[in-house]
Length: 341
Ligand SMILES: [Zn+2]
Ligand SMILES: [Zn+2]
Image (cartoon, rainbow, N blue to C red; front, side, top):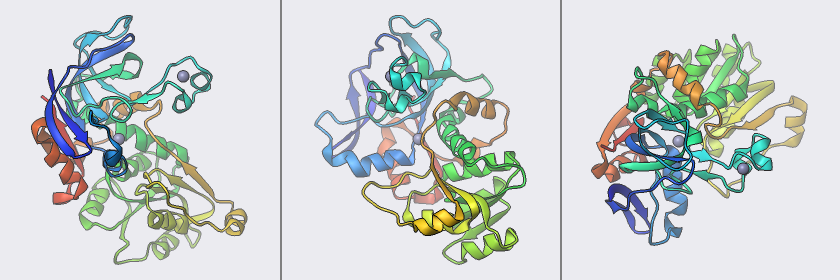
């Protein structure tokens, strides 16, 4: 048996559950750390009421040590320190061959459609585990997944040196995107509603910050961009308000990257006439994709100080407190880590 934080219809509790067993092509990881993601909060909000009695173990931003191998795993060694991408797929169907694992009929995601890592142990497909170098701590490695998500959003934005970029939402993903945009040589304006997060954005390299509760974003952007608007805006909140701010910031032929998770069932109005005449693009970016090894390299080369994002750590048996801290946005929290051993 092992300890795990179980989400059920009635609440969240840490309890004993059977040890997971790695199947063919899978490995068993003893979890060192698992960070809480905003998508865990989304999952709780949108799915908790529909959970069966067995409940669900969340958690997909993990790092740990491989302690057992399932059948036919050749290229992962017991004892290796690893992180894992949440999404796994069969690797050989038409969708996988086209590089679209999210369309694979056998796709599964750690912490969503299969048991997650808010637990002492988790099973992952060997193909989605990646070694982490000695110089990278388990805590930092747990953040390689959100770093990969932010990296993909920035790559989707095609930010070039000298571009003006707007990041709406200085949460952990927005802060990571800010740092990555700076590494690409862009000028960055970060918009948000909380001064303490905007202060972190400045530490992560933001050239300007704008608290949209006090100041209008668009005039600031126009002032910095010779009246043209930003080349791109990355929306990292997932609300219509933030998406509207992103569109209001960009120039003719500018790009909006939708990378914050919106709630289901909402619609967003655009005026096709305006979009057409301004040749603006809306690009969605979701997930770590193939970028986890890149994220690990960024950590190993000390290009991003993810430790600065870790504001709270809780042992597994206080996992419910960890989740509450994120859900209620307590104590200026950014990344909240659950220490699983
Ligand atoms: Zn995540
Ligand atoms: Zn497939």
